[in-house]
Amino acid sequence: MYMKNVMYKIIMGCYIVAALVLVTACNDSLDIQQAYPFSIETLPVPKRLKVGETAEIRCQLVRGGYYQPTTYQIRYFQPDGKGKLEMDNGTVFLPNDLYPLEKEMFRLYYTSASTDQQTIDIYIIDSFGQMQQLSFSFNNDNGKGK
Image 1 (spheres, rainbow, N blue to C red):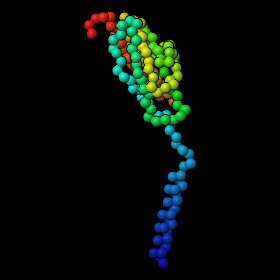
Image 2: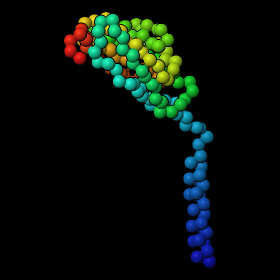
Image 3: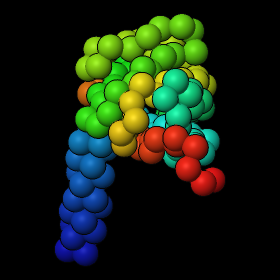
Image 4: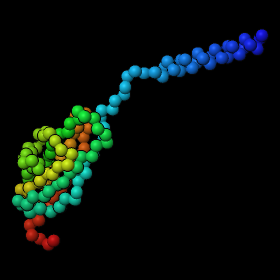
């Protein structure tokens, strides 16, 4: 009889522990990931440009996952030299202004307007505040050796 009582208590204890584990493990809310990491891949870009010459920068946005309402914007800043950056749809960028990025594969065109060293920094920002930066430097090619 004593052994039956001990077994009964052990079995009841196991049931209670199992019930507590099941109750605490249940959660009705879904954990939906919204902000996925992303990167920007580019093909090689020329390092030397003459004044008035244009370099094509082919870019591809590579997402770590897809959340439908995520949007991307692009902006640029030119700390050195002078030039013009343009999108493949004809949009001419003004420094530090945000522009919507509507495609995952796109081309940028940088036209040199300076005989000095030129640097452009391009920033891609998603709707969750995550950012990727690309930097390109161009030297003036005024016809000196190639």
